[in-house]
Length: 140
Image (tube, rainbow, N blue to C red; front, side, top):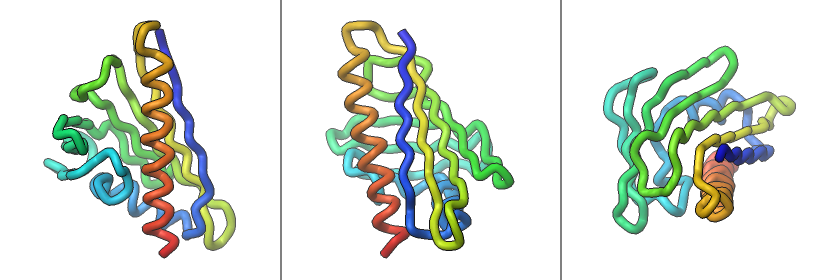
């Protein structure tokens, strides 16, 4: 069964600065409490982002789009320890005035009924905390 998590938050930093952080692909270990390490293999579209979770499990993202004009990054997560399939994420950054931006992080995935609500809560919390971490870094 399909599920969607959408986190939208305002960041008091110029949209280009927020986009630069997202487009850099790495850094998730600085923003997301659940991620203890993050490294990137390759560059741009086709790169692999490899994350180690706090419990030692590994996740891998494949970058499928980096659109600087639209300030949009898309990725797929084929490797993760969670009971979900077809995990896809989109991060978009929009101007919200001269020195602020709106960041929208959307994740879509498939999960069976037994795990759907648990995964919605876990992913929503993780993304929200990660965006808060990014915001704290960029607003400092």
